[in-house]
Length: 494
Image (cartoon, rainbow, N blue to C red):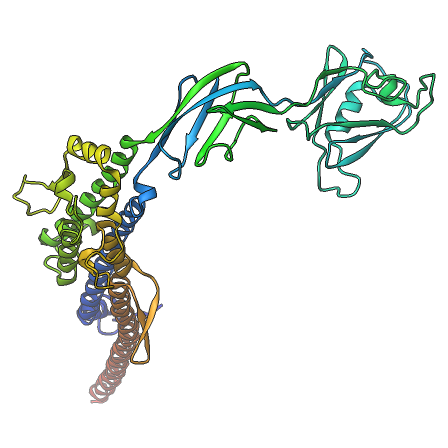
């Protein structure tokens, strides 16, 4: 706490505050400039984010397998369903399903909800893992069911038994979790008393095994799926996820004793959608860049959004980015025989503003026709990365549009570094801009910290000066009082 003006009567606190306010004006200027650079940095980060989104969309049309989509159509989804990858060949397949793959299922005959008074153990082998189940006299069917469902392999306790136990109408049912003949259960009572059924012969007591220890009640045998594809016999242990029957196709069988037709063909609609997604993001990015280049600053702005306007107006680096994006998209792919530019497949620069914005527009009818007629040639327009003129070099004008854009976007948005003259700098253009702005911002922070320290010293000096003045005035006042007293005494003596 500081108090002033006790002698002078001045409002020292207010006076020094006003003087510091004048001294602080350069600090206010530095704060304003620092905020401007921060907002400019945010704008570049916004541009970078949009370019990264564009890069993501370009990546979906950068290879022929990405661009030429495939679809698999079943004539009857109740018989089988299918999906196809890009490696699938366009063709028609007749599929006739004789039997579906099934899982082995067995059940007992003992029907009970009470304690079974059985005591012993039995073993279940699922074809891979083996687990021993211990039973005590108080166990019920429900207890045994839980023990089976929680059973682990005798050797590796991290492996669960591939058998599911359930209770239906108070009878224990065991079913293998996997289909196919390779996945059968082996059930063994650890005690075998021929000719009788002891209370320590658990599975026999439950009616799952007979006296000779064979399965007594098998409701469903483990079977493989058997079917034909264009007359070729196929056997598989599973009905779903069949990826090794038709190249590039995943089959799921659903109904035995039935047949259907699978058609694999180009999915033109999916290809159009991928190209539209790219064009939409391209337009979004071009619009953003155009806005930042053309918007004017607003005087007296108070919000960050308004203060940001005009900060990138006419920026030469941003102008170059926009021009390069337009060139990489519109320039022909020199050497292609069929489609060598976007306009050939129905993608042109919009005429709404005489092409000034650089936005792209799609004639979907023309694009679909090109994809239907010559999909591989459309793919080359986007994805070519081979020498087309025979000079053993792949020049930029020979590269597909997606390849060009990918290289440009990599160059712009890279977060990697490189060495120049012994110094490590950002490899990406925009990261370089951001780093440069960060340097300026940090310089302002240091200057402001130093200036703040100087202001503290100035304020302290002012207080010292005013305090010294108050002391001097107090001394003078004391001397005046003393002198007045002396003079008063002399007058009294007369």
